Image 1: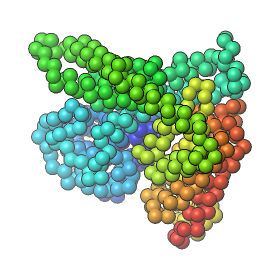
Image 2: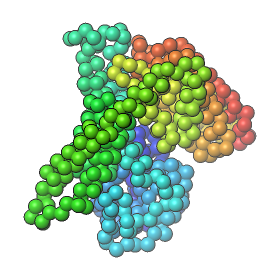
Image 3: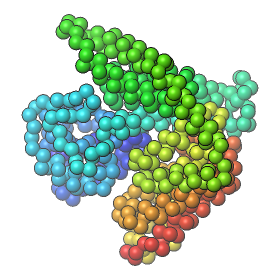
Length: 461
């Protein structure tokens, strides 16, 4: 029996490929023929062909972002998150095997969810709708944030104010990466692809325009999110209300929907929502800037707990998105520093525990621990997932404690970060990290506490 699958996580880095690997390993054990298409940060790989779809008995969509389901018309579709595939690949494959053949047509609702001919994995509830639309926007936004942030950091390497001299390399790097370049596209891309997830291609125009309006109004990241949802659902509403003769239906996607949805969304953002959201955004920034001492440590600890709780899941991504939103061109962020440091700790702490408590890990786990060093150093928190899935009761509390300590210390030391990703590879860039020595101390402290705590709690293998 042939089963086909698609995996896709918001960042398209780790979960996407771990889910695919889990499905392939489980399929081999169950003597099933499976082909998995990965939709990661480098684009779609191992793409499913029309012949693959035709031969397949059922389809598994292990995704946390919006994917095109129309090509699977007439096939039973099992929907789940990437974490479901990582934790219980055999269960998903068994659902696919047990799925009954469908009639050749699948009806799709305006909210992109299949309403007929689709079976959902029980654990996938709550992973669709608003969350999936938001994560689709975040997944498209992250490459812009990372590229822009690192280029900004490279401009700082010439001096913290060197970019102010027009015509220099530092100035050029800031132009490319900063507010007039990659970083300036962050909010429009986020808003555009939230709307795209809701309303497909017609949502791109009102979403991106709404994101740009949000930036111009000073409503920032929060306004962009709101504009994305507003633009997408406006298109969905207009599709239901406006009915044109068959001969004029071609005008809907190129004229009617983009013009009216953009007009409605723009007027609402400018005259109704823009001002209040800007006030909230300004208040949030002022609050962050006012944090000192104990209050800063509490926020840092909360960020650390969120980063380690689900290691790349929705809670982790919420903390990351919050941190990325606090970075501005030429304005390094304490919050982003705490986010990255705390996100590095889980794999590093686990890797350390495999070294100091070798007798509590299998040979395979110790080998995986070596890879965890590299993943943690690269700020890929997902490197902790295999260990957490195997022993969640001991692993998750240990790494949460370690990450909370790192986040709290990072905030206490007033460490700042001008780059939203990169791990240890951005630390040598001059001026990319504020208070670098103590920032490293914060990361090491959390790693040591988390690693030794896990080594103490772990049972012998």
